[in-house]
Each structure stands twice: as structure tokens, then as C-alpha cells.
Image 1: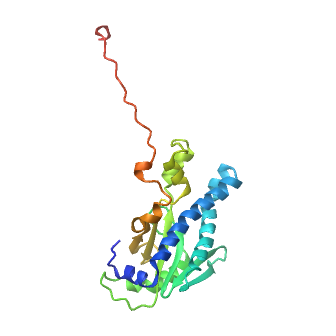
Image 2 (image 1 turned 120 degrees about the horizontal axis):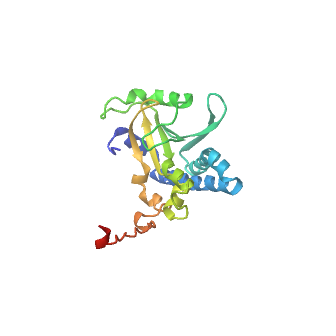
Image 3 (image 1 turned 135 degrees about the vertical axis):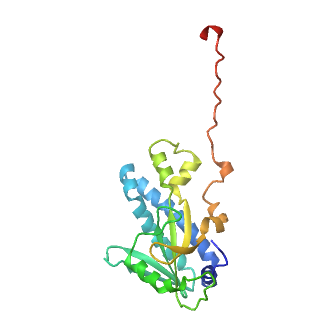
Length: 229
């Protein structure tokens, strides 16, 4: 992320940094709440099936509550084009935001008409890095997700689920970014929330030096006897 990019500057001109920190904190707590809702009320097989949907519902609810503490925030609950699910749209002046789970830190959410409409409004702005911003709207997506490879290894018993590292992987997101899409498949710049708000991340994730590591026991080879030759 280039902090000098005009879209990042425009974003922070309108959106309080304290809100971004609160939104990241809410992401962590929503993941944890969703995990326990599933684990405490379902067998592990069903819990794994619906965990992502439950976390999404908890996060959407909690983001609205957090935004409600900021007087400049405009909060809306909208329906997708099929009217089969709801999503939260937050605005701070000309900045609008939604949240989506993605597979990797570099990914974008699947195609959706409501996102396409928001992206189309700003796509003409993404021309060159030094573009002068005169357009009234800017759209950011809070993308987040888990390390599914590690979680699969934990669930398969390859990693001790009792270790702090494993617990953190099960309970919390592995990444979070605010991306500014140019289309439904590309974005030009982003804000890495884990990097820019380390004090929030440290409230939930153990430091690397605090993670329990199973010591490697050296193998001693028996010296061959003369009759072994």
C-alpha cells in the first residue's frame, strides 16, 4: 500500500482512524463470537459448514453498532439483487464501505450487482497514480479471511489445537485489508490493517516469540560396530 496514493488520502480525510481501528477490533471479536456460537450449539461437522455464514451475520451486526458511535457515519442495511440476503453499507461523507470474506489477502469478493454498481461509480478515477480527485464518491471493501490451509490441518489433527497459535488461527482472521477496486476483479491500492494497526492485532494474536513451539529432539545415530560392516 502506498500511503501517498490519493485514494488513501481521500479515505482518511473522511473516515476517522479511530473508526478503522474499532472496525478491525470488531472483526476480531466477531470472528470469535461466531466461532463460539457454532461450537457451543452444533456438532463440529455442522459448525464447520456454517461458521463463515454465522461470522458474516455477527460481523454485519457489530459493524453497524460500532459505526453508530460515530456521528458522521451513515448506516444502511441493503438487500442483494435477488433479495436473498442483507448487507451493511457504511458511509462517511463521499466514502462508502462494505465488508466481504475472501480466500486470500490479495483476493476480491465474488461478483455481485450491488458491488458492481458501487465500483462503476469510481472506476473512471483509477487512471494514473497522480490523478486529481474530483469525483464525489469513493468505494472501499473491508476484505478479510482465515488461513484455511492451517485450519484444515488443525481439524485433521496435524496441528495440536490446544497450542496458542492453533487457537488464534481457529478464532481470528488471518488478514484484513481495505481495498479500492477498479473492477470486480482488480484493485489499484489497499490499506493493510494488520500492518497499520499492530496495536489492535496485538490484543488478539500472540506474538511470534510467545507461540509454543514443540522442541525438535536431535536423533543420535548409533556408531556402527566393526561386525556391522
